[in-house]
Image (tube, rainbow over all chains, first blue to last red; front, side, top):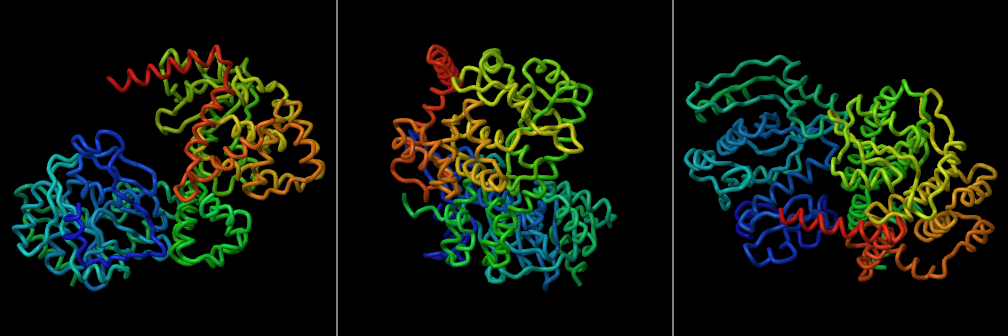
Length: 264
Length: 357
């Protein structure tokens, strides 16, 4: 666990005596025998245990999932979309889609190519000002993506890799220093893309109508129904501000060329 | 009590939050979240025009909770419309209880109050047709276990909770406010007779004094006090709101006798006062004191602890014991021993057997 934090959160400031924290979380050994025999780990959100305990080896992954849960469950000042967000200058590219669509892989590759990381896993779209707010935490990579990104960018730093989790093999990539330093600065949405990784396919960018894009983004939102009218208005503003596309790919270098082109 | 929960201070004197440091805000938000009153706190501060003066970081949490509560209110009204149409053809008085009642009656206690079940009360004799109509409209029993079915139908004041197949919302249908096996169970007819209609709807709610008594009866017979602080705050808000009406306190005292809830009302006023400084007139207190049990000091020890938010900062070394004793007490009140012992043995055995599977 300390390895997970040391490697992935190296560039984050450690606050020893914080005055205000959004979420108080802890990883704890469970009560009873599972503290010692085939040890497990529990995620505590300020004394509440939202998940079942996991094998101790999965502590790092549980920590990341737990933090995602805290944000997705409570941060209703944002419309939260299942998406990775990267930016060039202050114009953001939102890569939305269900798990397995290849958005994190694409996100990691773009970040390795110098794009700024705002967030992996979830886009935080402010209900008040329509900006995308950063949480530049480690990028979660699963199964083959881990090798793909290590091969694509040998300089990338990976945290400990855990096998046999509910989501398969899971590892995380350290966010770049510059993205962490810009961690308080929002970006404006410019592109909304629904990627789909398809083995051995060509690279294909197709434009998506605003109406369909809105429905698909709503489907991929964690709290669209919780926000009611605020949710609809925020989504409508995102769609108005963005060019919307579907994107199919199998080769990262070609994919990156397409997004570099889009961003100019 | 450690740290004298900030949340009490914030509820008793909302203006005092303006002097809070960021670390005090940190603790207040945590206590409020844990007690499920973050949105209520947000409304309270807003009603005093204090919300915009809250520092940005805690302010974001208060606004987020409020957005959630706003949407909750919409969903609640939609769900009520569905229930109303499912039961339209029956000519049955439908009384909504607790949170739903506060919302329909537009009580202060409804603002920012979140809950998971809708509670409905109908006359016991009409239960079969109400249940049938709800099932035809898509509600299903949450349990098919024969023993659970019998437990509810024979002894409880409600049928087994219903869940809507598509919307997954839950609905508890009651015919009284306390279990039939409970000594202080009131005559349900009296509650129906005194109920008031909601203009433009087919629903009714209890009269204000009965609404307070139900809230008290529920809280002081309850075993799991995870929402204890929210519930005592309900009582505080209801009492503060209703006491503006002339003659409210006298009616409340009279009804507590008619409905057999003197003891519950005594506790409600005592702990609302102790915890949230609810103003209870001296003459009312004098009458209520006559209901005080011999073990009032013990009850103070237990309830003042158990009605705090279930958060580490509000607990002391006795809190766990207090919560456990009150849990035991609730079963004691619920049914006589000759029913309780077999029931607990059976539940305990099933839990063990279930774990082994």
